[in-house]
Structure formats: structure tokens, C-alpha cells
Amino acid sequence: MIPRYSRPEMVAIWSPETKFRIWFEIEAHACDALAELGVIPAEAARTIWEKGGAAEFDVARIDEIERETKHDVIAFLTHLAEIVGPDARFVHQGMTSSDVLDTTLSVQLARASDILLADLDALLAALKKRAHEHRDTVTIGRSHGIHAEPTTFGVKLAQAYAEFARCRHRLENARAEIATCAISGAVGTFANIDPRVEAHVAEKLGLAVEPVSTQVIPRDRHAMYFATLGVIASSVERLATEIRHLQRTEVLEAEEYFSPGQKGSSAMPHKRNPVLTENLTGLARLVRGMVTPALENVALWHERDISHSSVERMIGPDATVTLDFALARLTGVIEKLVVYPDNMQRNLDRFRGLVHSQRVLLALTQAGVSREDAYRLVQRNAMKVWEQGADFLEELLADKEVRAALPEAEIREKFDLGYHTRHVDTIFERVFGQS
Image (cartoon, rainbow, N blue to C red; front, side, top):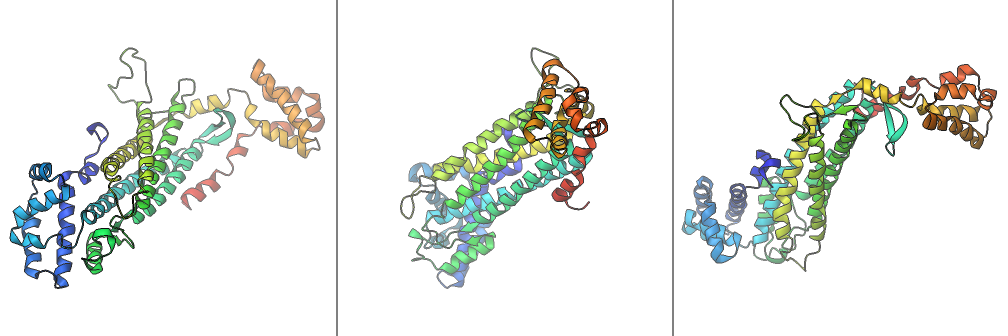
């Protein structure tokens, strides 16, 4: 997590100050429940809230205590006792460190999810706007990087919209799955704390109760969460890669906005490089790289160990902060993307009608020619375009075998671009609904 690829709101979720505040709230809510159950004095619970709630926890002091105790939760509780006084003896009654740590991580990941969901909403809005703007902007579709058949640039963006809408749905589910609370004590049996305490804390923090916590919240939840972030990152990279390809000099159908005063190269003043989408490609790799450690955290020893702890201290902040930055950057790229319809048409026409080969193939089969012979006839003329720069329509009209099956008017009709875009409205209605 470095400032260059971070945004303040997401970073704040993972700050020591935020973490210790959540720790305190978990402990204080638990004290409220214990007081209601008659386990601790009600006055003690009020004192804990009054003194701890008004305090600014001293991160340096907690770190100092931890250097001696070698235990972060004990260090915090010792510092809290310095603030609260004698009533601090009622804090952490029947609880274990994992109750605090795991529940806090749930809160942090849920809050991070809310930011990421807002990021996705902004990206979806940008994609929808630009998709409608270029709904009818005809461009060439490519398979294997080679010209295939015509589509529209709006359809390309509609596909991205649908993909990120699925990402949003997955993240909603991942948020719900990760947002659980565990206040069950050693090995998760509630031997020294009433399950009603857990239910109270969960309600106050907006979490669900973990059905079986075994002292830790099961890490399959976390694995699914980080896997979801990895899938979103892959979708970021897919769209970023599309833009990078479209910005290549030989293509130049779209490019990142190049602001006044921007420099593309220290050596070549003419350069306008796709630096933002290249950056997004790299950031996506980082987020995906955190998925495998999360998967490996699932297999803990017996009721608990802490082999997952060091991993999560890193991937929790890094994955969410990086993805937050990436989604915001991608939204900016889409909002300011420069599109060149004339270049799209020029590229579409570059191979002089070759993109209509399938329509001619189908017309020949419908005219009674076998598929094998029809393919041979169309490919024979198509290769002249590839190898000699010929005009595909002219070659077909001059081919006696083709003309024996199809009249000139029908051949010419197969070169109508509108044929390829006649179902764009249907696609848009499926993606965006009635508009």
C-alpha cells in the first residue's frame, strides 16, 4: 500500500486509529450485553463507554506495550485500562483475541466493500453513458486480433457494462458472506461467555452471527471475498487491455485523454502512450496475486492457528486499497476516452469488403451450393484480398462459379453494413433495459 496508488477514504479503514476504535467498540458493546445479563455491573459498562469512547488511543503507547508483551490485543487492553481505570477489569470477559481480531476484520472488509460498490456504480454509470453515445458507431469486431465482422463501439462498452454489473452482484454476495461476528471465546464453545453477547455485538456492528466460529471465523469466507476481488481486477484488466490495443498507432480507434502539458516520453516528444491502462493492467496483477494466499488460509490447524494472520494484515489493506484506486482510475479513463469513428470506418474498409465473407458463404449454401464448395469459392476470392489487395466484391462478381449461384444484386446486398447492426437495440435492451 503506497500513496501513489491509494485513496484516503479506503486507506483510513486500515489505519491503526480506526482498528483500535473498532476494537474498543467490540469490547464496549460486549460489556453492555454482559451488564444486561448481570455478569458485570451496569455502572462499569457505562464507565467503559464514557472514558474509552472519549479517548484518543495512543498508537505509540500501544506499540510500546506490545514490544514487551509480544501480543497486540493485550497491549491494547493494557492501554485501555490506563484510560478506563479499575472498571477495565470487566473488559474482555470470557473473550479471546480472535473474537476481537476476526470481528474487526469483518467490519473493515464490509466497509471496504461499500466503497468498492460505490466505485463500481461510478464505473457502470460512465460505461452506460459512453455506450449510449456510441450505440451506432460502427467498428470492426476482432477475433484473435484479426478482423472478424462489424459491430458497434457501443456494443463493446455494453459488454463491459454487463461484465461489471456481474462483478457488482458478486461483490454484494461476498460482502454479505464476509460480514459475520464471532464472540464465542476459546475454541468457539461459548464456555465463558453467553451467545447472547455475540448476538448483541453483531447487531450493533451490522454483522451476522457466525454459526460456528471454532475460535476463528472460517477462512473459506475470506477466500471467497478475495477471489471476488481478483475477478473484478481481471475485468478491469480486460477492459484496460482492449483500450491499449485500440490505442496502438496502427489502429487508433480510441485513446486515453492526453491532457495539456502532458508528456509521453522523456526521449520522443511525439509519444502519447496508454499509461493509465498499462498501469491498470499491473494493478490487476497485484490484486489477483493476493487470491492464492487467501485460498491457502482456509486450511488452519484444528480450531485455530495464526498462519493466516500475517497474510491478512497485508492483503486486507493492499487488495482493497489497490482495487479501489484501479476502479476509480478506470472510471476516469472511460469518462474521458477519446473515440475516433472515422478511424474505425477506415479500418473497417481496409480489407475492401472482406468482413462480409460469411454472408456470401451462407447465401451460396441457401442457393444450393454445398457448404464445402461454398467455403472454397468464398475463400478463393478472399485470399486475393489478403495477398493482392484486391476488392472482395469485384472478385466475387467476376467469379463465374459464384455468379452461377447468385445474381449480382444479391451479392451486392450481402455487403450492407446495416445487416450487422440491426440487433443492437435488442442487445442494449437486454443490458440496460427499456430506456
